[in-house]
Length: 83
Ligand SMILES: [Zn+2]
Image 1 (cartoon, rainbow, N blue to C red):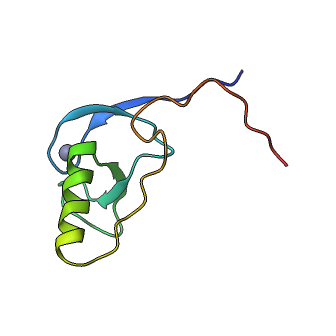
Image 2 (image 1 turned 180 degrees about the vertical axis):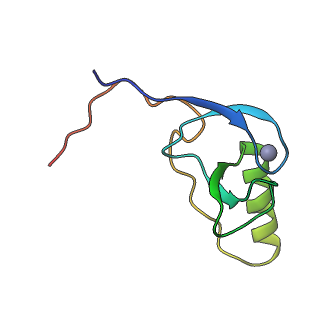
């Protein structure tokens, strides 16, 4: 089979509708009211909000977080070598 998985959803932070790779997209935990909650479920964060968050972290002198490749796009059709 192979291929990729692409999901669509609303950004938990700004509400934008966007597509993402559910296994790679950055997310934050939020409760049913949309408030950040460590015990909530994982909700996706769109690229704009991600970029804003990294800009904020730079301002605060915090290390930037790593964005996984393909977080916002389908993975290329290629098989990865497994060991
Ligand atoms: Zn957003």
